Image (cartoon, rainbow, N blue to C red; front, side):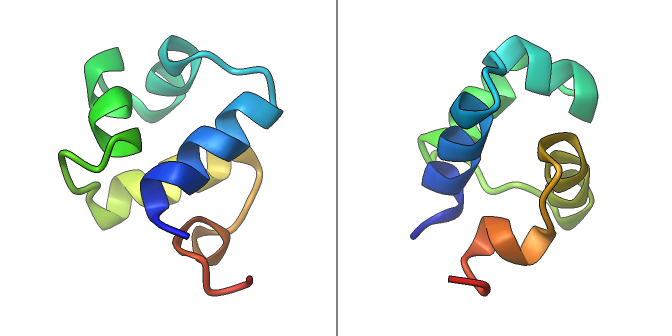
Amino acid sequence: MDIGKSIKRLRTARNMTQSDLAQHVGVRENMISNWERNTQVCTVSNLVKIAKALKVTPDDLVGFNN
């Protein structure tokens, strides 16, 4: 599974909007959209912030635990 799909799947499973996640990560909402659509690559530091906000490990986001 790709990172964008993982972010969207986990975000929606937690009933979070893109805006909610953006606030947790400290980015604009359009960045979340870009990451979910895989039109931009997420930095490692933001990946860690996303994982923390979604209460998963970074490995869960990149599919190493699947």
